Image 1 (cartoon, rainbow, N blue to C red):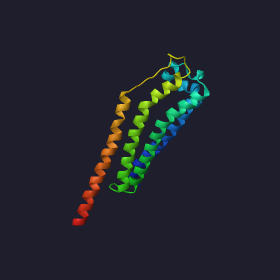
Image 2: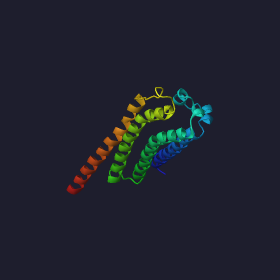
Image 3: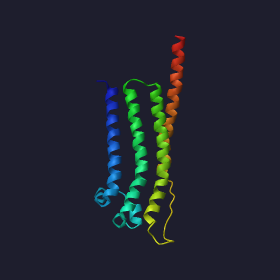
Image 4: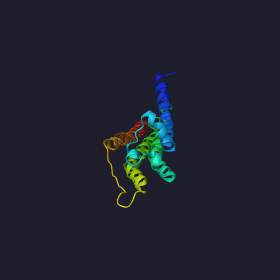
Length: 177
C-alpha cells in the first residue's frame, strides 16, 4: 500500500474522530455540564452568569441550539473535507469535484466563523434573559481565534481557484497535444 494512501487514511480517521468529538462534546456540555468539570472544560461564561446548575431547562436547550449551529457548520466543513480526501484517493487532483469540495470547505468555514462570532452574544442573551430589567447583558466578542479561523477558510477558497486554473491549463494542453 502506498504511503500516500496511508496518509489519506490517517487524515480520514482524524476527521471522523474530530466529528465525533465535536458532536459528542457539544451535546455533553449542555446535557450534563457538571460532569465535564473534572475534564477541565472551560465554564467561564456559564459560571459568570450563575453556573450551569441554575439554568432553566429551556435555557440549556437554547444554549445547546446556540452552540449546535457553529458545531454543525464545522462538522459540515469536515464532511466536505472527507469528500476532498476521497477525490484525492481516486487521483482526481484537478477535477471539478475537487475544486467544488475546496470551495465548499472555504464557504462553510466562513459561515462557521460568522456563527462563532455571534455565538457568545446569543449565549449571554440566553443566560441573562431571566435577570431583572437592567441586569440583562449584551456581549460582543471578537477574538484572535475567530480571526485565525479566516486562514484555513481563505486557503481553501484560494486552493479551489488554483485547481480551477490548473484544470483549465491541463485541458488547454490536452487540446494542443
